[in-house]
Length: 132
Image (cartoon, rainbow, N blue to C red; front, side):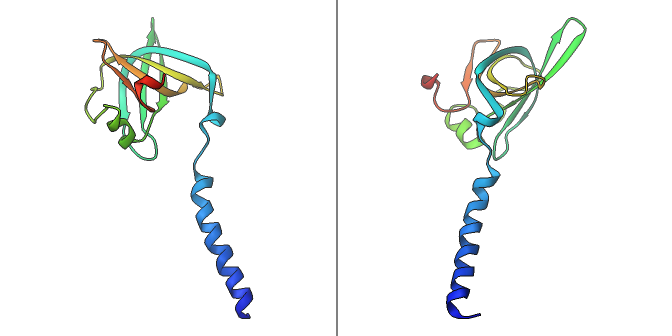
């Protein structure tokens, strides 16, 4: 290969490697419908504070029926900046979750906006609480 072709190949490889992380991140608008807010009351069964996004799992009981919900939340560092730290809320705690429902209405899943404990403590998971 001559020098010009080699430089072109190397430049293309560098640009492609820079674009790969952008492909990996999904759009929240593609997964969640901002026009479908949902409020769920139930028991927190699991919290996973992990990158790139944390997850909260809640069981909702309606008589003998149990529905399991999953809520995607912010990054651990972003949640800590907003006042939510590991062990802030223990599993087994009754909570009210305000979220944006998944576009797929058949899924019990949402983008968590706010979580409220039974004693009234409120935690926003994206941005400051003043943004809502």
